[in-house]
Image 1 (cartoon, one colour):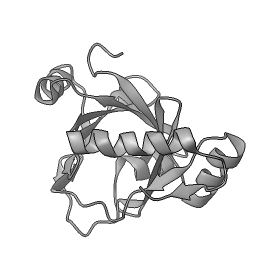
Image 2 (cartoon, rainbow, N blue to C red):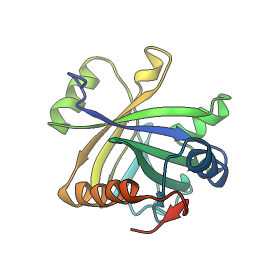
Image 3 (cartoon, rainbow, N blue to C red):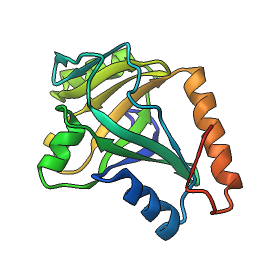
Length: 177
């Protein structure tokens, strides 16, 4: 558990090709099934590097999640619009992009991050959560931290996906929840 950011529950990979990534994770890694989020993600608001992003953005081409044990595996294929994901791929990187944490006190934790000089790469409000990607990777090479204030609906949705992974027979790579 991070004393500053909360319990790490998620590891996210940013990929160029969602279909190839799902095939790799299900066939090679034995992790699945994946659930695809509807795209475009419906956001109350999004900011990338402090700039408000219009609702009709192309930040995400695909978002899929599954679980390996109690660890959420998230796959993100970025769209063409500027985002931390697009920056990651443009830098020649592919793979682990961020770890997701559940915030205990989102506002206090965001204030502490800013006071420590940690920038915010992306922030927003989705129907199930408020979130921010913290630029922790600029302070030490590695992955970003995503701070998530999850509502009960998000916990319920993720719980249903987690349960589907426990029952997975390895046949279907993608399911609907």
